[in-house]
Length: 228
Image (cartoon, rainbow, N blue to C red; front, side, top):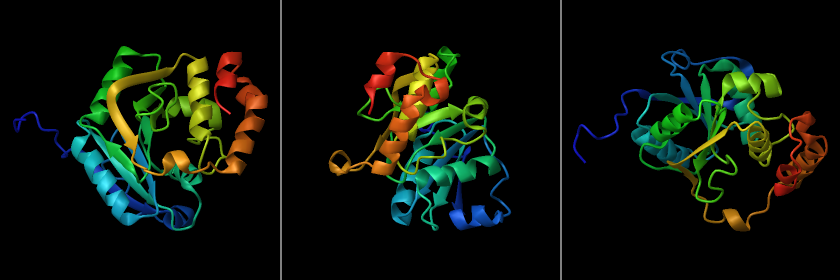
């Protein structure tokens, strides 16, 4: 790869924030300056993992963004933490990921290109090596679309760790608003993932939400049966 072809990190910033800082409403002076139109939310409890994941994401993005590394020092859980962070950041599009994310080269550039050819897309599913576009386990979502769904939250506030991405994906698929690019690679590098159970409270909340079609937003019976 020539120097010209190498993805530049000059247009990518990393900002480190704590849950306790968000809760107190005290932002570092540089936290909200120079924000890009794409905000990446990366909740973490292991600093080393977050350092590696965010550095690789920045190096390989190939497109401007601001990566917000969110330390869950209050034990909120990643989904409530991202919901808490969303109102204080800019960004027409928001990426949600995790401390164990592993980014492929040009992961964000390919995502942006996919949305250009799918203008109805409101949620982009990254290739996570598992769902292949059926579900946005890691995704990029349009903020304006979220406002109509959850009043400005990133996810429905009843979830803590699991299933919120499933609900969001099913709503997008019902609306034919889920985009995908196989080269937009963002994988959860968790070697015990398949053997680890989901939180039962989150599963119960999902099943309850599913009974109403997620507030009437999903009426396709095949979609409703797909996950449980």
